[in-house]
Length: 481
Image (cartoon, rainbow, N blue to C red):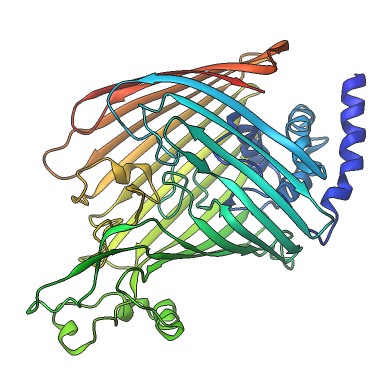
């Protein structure tokens, strides 16, 4: 009891770190499963939340948490303890070490290009606020091959315009297991981001806008698409622009709009006028045929664009809370034929019982997703697609239509133990592939007292059969400090 009282006092005193008008640090993204699970539960049962992009700002989650103090007291107490490091003036937020062994060399979903052959992973994060309007965040992953910054940047501004400069991640989707446009499946890119800390007006408008530079592509088209001339490619680093806006349509319904523009790099020079034309008229600036190219200069076509319309609706049915969400994603413009669209929907039951939650997600996309004639590597960063993990599960130049499904079951075995299990399947719709199946299950246990500084330990098993019919497996042991 004394510990809980001390925690509540600390939370009350910490509100100075989240003072209205100031900036906010972020919660981790796909690095702290137990915290992220409880945040997902919170957002599904709270009213008037309307947050559709990640990573979540600690300011947002703290404010939402106060609304369930009486309706979900157990979740409130658990999450209050978990987010307490993120609402102080400075703190080391998390630290984790993992030892793993795996077969094959399959990319792990949403893990910044790491694979089943990644054996040693050390990750952690910390931040410091210097007053209300400036702060520094340092977070990342170190493995035996490289260092991967995840949330390492400086941030400054005020409640309606926070500027993040550095390695700041972006996830533009209400989905949990995948994101068609932008996720953490590929490495984080250096970027400049501006977003609001507090929602704007009674419509709870939120925005997130960034520009970043991607890793080098093997080839970027130097000439135009004129079929009568030989195409010339040169290596280069494209730019990636992203924009996400969401608003409250009703108390329970949130609508989101997202946009990605990959442009320039290497031999392709882009002016502000080119960018503006590509943004406002993507159907003409980015869909140039070989016939049209005869009358246009080499630099006319801007690059490649992806966009999406998303919704998220939460409510209760017979006292069972649920969250239903969906997405229509498109390349350049909405349509059929040579246009490329993707359709996704999901449902989340945060409290099937007090200790169980279930989530189901399905995505279906047409051929050509993450492909572009200007860029040899398509929408990839360091060889991995920047969106849905299924986009990596085919031959490198075969952009096959596909569909994926995932089921996640979280079982809180006790106050100290949890089991998180995900089943996935992927079907590529062209010949030469098999339907893939995979199981990922993780067990975690809090220790009664720290052992060598570790507060909890875990074990994870990841296995299955890929789209080529080849088996893979990985086992991992972890300790969180």
